[in-house]
Image (cartoon, rainbow, N blue to C red; front, side, top):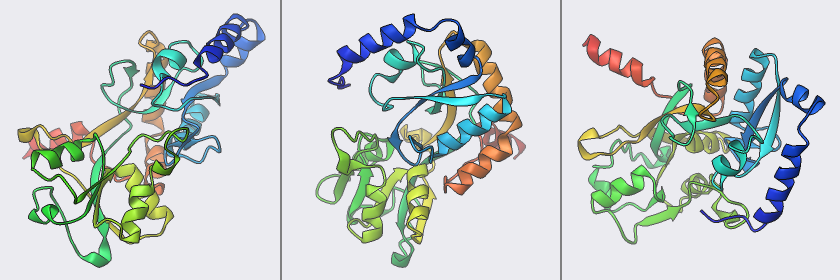
Length: 280
């Protein structure tokens, strides 16, 4: 991963801050839910506290009788090593269950990558195996499961337009997460293969009539498109993990309402899906 140019200076600041954390400072931290937040990554979070994770953090903090305190750091650049593990913050929201560098909570929602198309086109695409994918102009977030799945099907070349999933305004400001959805709405691409929360949020924001279909996992081909989303803490913070899981269970309905309000396409939890299969 690219290191930020101000890393050396930043480490000095962290060292001073850690040395200064005594007495009243530690007492204040005991009253805070200290979140590692991305400052500019809607629909998930931003410094104006407008994102999905900002709203969910508020709900969890309120349940625990705490206030939210953010440490802002882009979520793709040294976040675990340089921010979470140096104790500048304690909690990551919106990580995939099983993300090994952290201790993760039970998931609080499940979503996936989607096929998005304009309703007025009437494409009604349901699967990447649809032969029309070989002729349509496809916008896809690169280095993601749908991008890999296209390659497995021999769908490459001029009808593929690549977009970034991770956003870094310092380097590629034009590659903001909603650009693929906005290009779909404008007709620059015929179909978009995009992470579900991004598709749902930007479609809702633009009041765009899009058809959004969540891709089905394909275990026989190794294609996994759906993921459970958890919170993450340092591996030693088992007590904090337990408290978060209790709050997530108590606030399940409020959290679901937030997700629905942001247009997130929600899937049944993995255990619910497994239970349905056993019932049959």
